[in-house]
Amino acid sequence: MPAPRILILGATGGLGRALHRHLAAGYELASWGRADLDFEQPDTFSTKLASQKFDVLLNAAGMTSPDVCEVQPERAFLANTVAPQILAECCHARGARMIHFSTDYVFSGKTRDLWFETDETVPVNIYGRTKLAGEKAVLKASPAALVARVSWLFGPDKPSHPDNIIQRALQTDDLSAVADKISVPTSNADISGWIEQLIIRHPTTRGVLHLCNSGVASWHSWAEAALTIAARLDVPVKTTTVQPIELASLTQLKAPRPLMTVMSNARLQSVLGGEIRNWYDALEEYLVQKYQPQ
Ligand SMILES: NC(=O)c1ccc[n+]([C@@H]2O[C@H](COP(=O)([O-])OP(=O)(O)OC[C@H]3O[C@@H](n4cnc5c(N)ncnc54)[C@H](OP(=O)(O)O)[C@@H]3O)[C@@H](O)[C@H]2O)c1
Image (cartoon, rainbow, N blue to C red; front, side, top):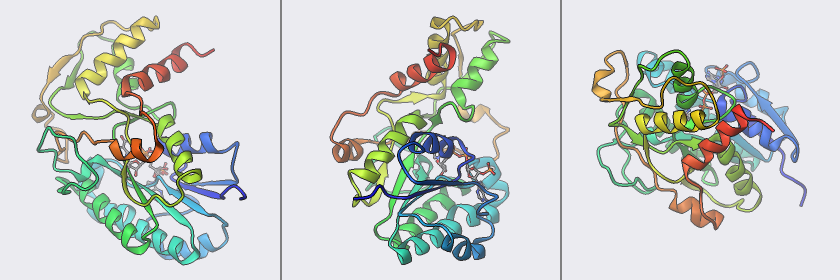
């Protein structure tokens, strides 16, 4: 069987860049950004996609800031719901498989229990509502599609919470982070490896699948973990201690956030047939590569 031809959308984003780096060596790969396919102009999709050969479409594009979505709901609906639906229709029509990335923010966050793929979805903000509508539209238009929900991404391609807290700790020892919001930090590099396996070894896996590392963290414990690892790597952080604060104290946020969105990765473990490593181990590997590259 020839290797599948892959098209990545969102190639300028954190996850899109990681997917590109992981897959570039082994596959016939095209990686498109907004300039190649603008999700706010879905009427251009069929013409633009007609000129590109692909067997698998990885959609890592979307409007990803909850606060921007909250104040620009029409644009969020186009990018997170309408565009994915049209992409799924195109994939279905040409027999391609679509893997569409979604979010833990489809859940209400109102329980400490693990969230499973089959659990009820009740998003609390526009971002979550438009992403959930996108999930449903994709699966309706293309029953062979896979909706991959991810949470709290980190990696070398775009600064995220651990990078930001380390940057701040180089300047000051007066740090705070929210302690009452929990989920699972997840490595973009790990996701890229799982996606390759899902493409090559599990071509018929469909429906909703949670793609996250194992374990649980708050923004506070994630921050302290990053600082502790950084200090061990001789990064001159001024402290490894972070003051815990409540989400409710962040009054500048425009979109409400769900509090507890820890997803179960049991289905992922069962599909791939192996243990999924803890987020802490993945974070440590990332920070070692960043601060002590070989
Ligand atoms: N980051 C997280 O912690 C997190 C958590 C849960 C779920 N997710 C999901 O994971 C996926 C990837 O997230 P990410 O962190 O890699 O996102 P990201 O870094 O914000 O990248 C988003 C990508 O989408 C593109 N994009 C945005 N609006 C567009 C438009 N109108 N037309 C075409 N492209 C557009 C961006 O292009 P530009 O560079 O031109 O803006 C960028 O390439 C998304 O589906 C997101 O909802 C992320």
